[in-house]
Length: 356
Image 1 (tube, rainbow, N blue to C red):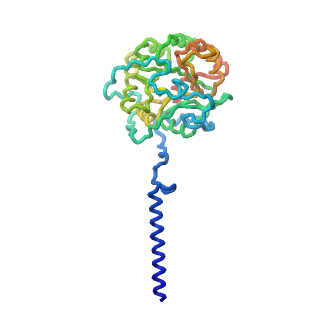
Image 2 (tube, helix red, strand yellow; image 1 turned 135 degrees about the vertical axis):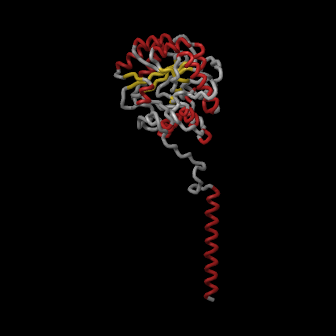
């Protein structure tokens, strides 16, 4: 009888053991939280910081976080630069004549600024989720808020959107999709005020305005890449991105004799981890912004609104994006530059930003 009871006890224990193992297996296969294989339905682990250059120099702030891509934007806050409004689906800036396509680049002609010995990026393993650039402004002349995850992602791939929060420094940039007749006046004003800026040009601009591009370089300004035909980079392939950049590089080199292009403003401010990684491998720092306005169309308040828009949002480390097609910006430019200096700010260049 005792032997029979022991057998029954062993049998019961065996049944419980089998049921327990089966239940665990079912849970594991069902993907119940806590039992997922690593990486399944969860954010991919952050890659380690890239080495070389100033890839980790972006994250300046410790500002309170905002949602990545501007999900916590203030009511009425603009998103993306080239329209600085809603996400655009077109390949050119608002009001911009679609740029003519340039000739295809030479085979195997990487940007000479590419990090020496850089390991080619396998972008197939990187996220291509499209992000639109958005900020949460404030009225206290503090840096806009940006999520820590966005800061880390940009820093990993050598991208910048703002300078240090404890330095009264301003970085001035212009986007040049096409010429509206105002760039010569802007260059005159910059020269008169001893201010150096960065001009991000498209293939169309290089093709139609070579003299102005030469003047920019001769007067000490930086000329950056704004792509050949202004596509949203996450929407095109790696090879198409390379071609977009190389057409601009080769046209710029043909005009100026220089092969030093290393700053990229992604069209419409749209990017993904894939595009950040690929363009960094090609030698570029993506340059976003901490201040931009709807300035590619006439402002209701004219030059006064252009002036006030800049001065009301001025902050340490401000990376300002303006469009050179704006008459209002042009007419307000001298006053803007003088009053920024009067408030104790110093103008520096993107080279200073990256080296800092």
